[in-house]
Image 1 (cartoon, rainbow, N blue to C red):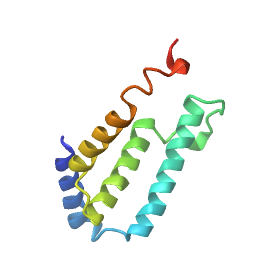
Image 2 (cartoon, helix red, strand yellow):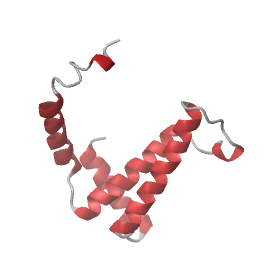
Image 3 (cartoon, one colour):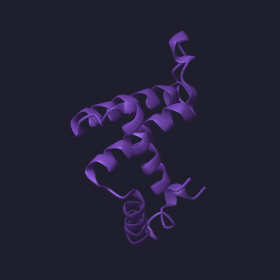
Length: 109
């Protein structure tokens, strides 16, 4: 699935099942909530925290997908074409960081 297809699929779902998009500010709050849920799974899977019984229903892949879903919703409702945005972002990062990480002694092991 391409980013354009993902944006279109989520937009179609919102129109059929979601009634309408939440407001941009509400979706920003929802995104923050979803990132927190992802952080909890990361902390318990890769960090020092142990799982709680209530964590059993959450999976890393589902939490990442939830974050992506809300990001796509925000992109859709604000008119951001994610394919174009990511292309420009990759060019920016490549131009800015093309030597930075290669020359970082902390990354050389």
